[in-house]
Amino acid sequence: MRCHYEVLGVDQNATEDDLKKAYKKLALQWHPDKNPDRIAEAQQRFLEVRAAYEVLSDSRERAWYDAHRDVMLQKSSGDDYQDDTINIFPFFTSSCYQGYNDSENGFYTIYNKLFKDIAEQDLKASTDKTIEIPEFGTSESSYDDVVGPFYAYWSSYCTLRSYVWKEEHDTREAMDRRVRRLMEQENKKLRDKAKKERNEEVRELVAFVKKRDKRVQLRKIYLEEQAAQKKKTDAERRNREKQKKLEELANYKESQWMSFQDLEKQLDDLENSVKNQFQEAKMNNNGEDQNDNLDDSDDDINELYCVACNKSFKSDKAFLNHENSRKHKEFVQLMKAHIQQENEDLSLNTQDQVELTNADYDQFVQLPTNNQSSKSKKKKKKQRRNNKENDASSDEQTETLVSNEQNEEEEEESAAPTVTKKKDKSTTETNPEASQEPIILQCFVCKEEFSSRNALFKHIKELDHAKPIQVKSEPKAKGKSKKK
Image (tube, rainbow, N blue to C red; front, side, top):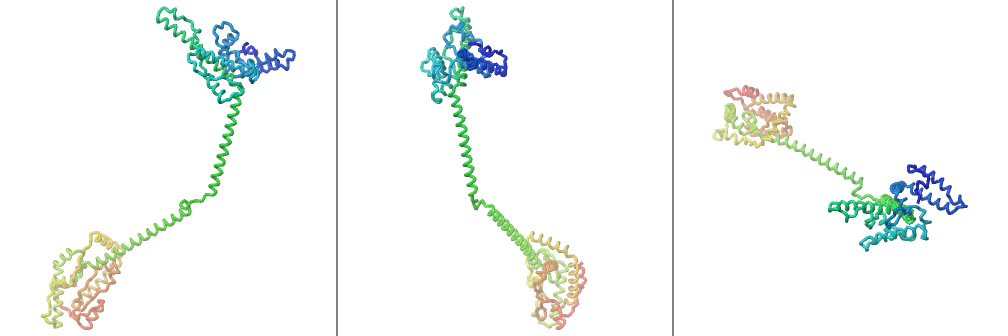
């Protein structure tokens, strides 16, 4: 076996372009068709050139060849070969076989015999005789049964031989235990190194054979076809699923509860319902305001009223304090004197006359009780204050009319012995609905009832049912001071 670099005529630092040029040149030179007079020599040189180029053109094989070139050349020549280890370096070339067939010099026959010999050496040196080492097989061997298991085992090959012949020290010659241990350590390193080299050699040979094995190439093509077929099948399946989904989408009928139109209708109904509820609540609030106004008017009607003094009071306590006041007592005495004078003028039986006391006055007037809550009092007070501010001008006119009516009353006091329930001026101003209720006026002489003061005053003037009387105090002046 010659060096591959010498066969191609290049140095060890040659580039890929240099190797390619040298190979083309030598291939044309030693091609059998170009050398018809020496065909045998030409075939041998041509195979040698091609084997050298195949190894050096592969970067991985070239790196391993560069590392073991000297050992391969030395062992291939047979110099200093002391052990019986099978020399595998002559099989790192395609010139060792002829064609990829099962003939005597064929690819499968040569390498099947080589790996079988290596396995027999390992089994002979191994203590475990039950180990089964897969064979290389033939060109017709099944990949799953033979080819696959073979490359799986030999690609991670580990020799079973001990390589004790690589030891340099004889431990029997050691002087003491320490030296013997050092010798053992050194011998172990040498054995491990030899095993490592052998393992690398066999693994590299397996890679070399696998690259050129037609069964592996066919398997690779088969797997690629299977992958392409699977890819095509997956694509067709996805297209069918996509088409099916499109058909389902085209035939899809939206559920009623998912319909957007129904959703819009529901939203409209909800909006209308909320709107109606808001309107009802607003109307109820307005009704409550009106009821509050009516309640205020009723409260005003139910206010405590003093007929003698023409005053109204908001609480029982204020009314009681008014009854104990000096002015109230003077007006009561004035009313009593006026009633007695009318009785004398009308010649009524004195026995039938009943003296009008405060108790009788209270019983006759039937004063209403004031059970207003503090909340309604505050609300009525606030409403009255707002009405007074907004109706300032109307208040002035009303005061003028009331003062005129009061003056007429004072002039005709003797003819107005009527007892009625009067409303406060503020009630009339703020609650016109309450002022529309009829006021019953009665003539004290003939007991005839009238619906208005004008009718009563007209009756008194026509029938002369009233005469002026003299009193100690002047009520007109007191009434003016009261207004002030």
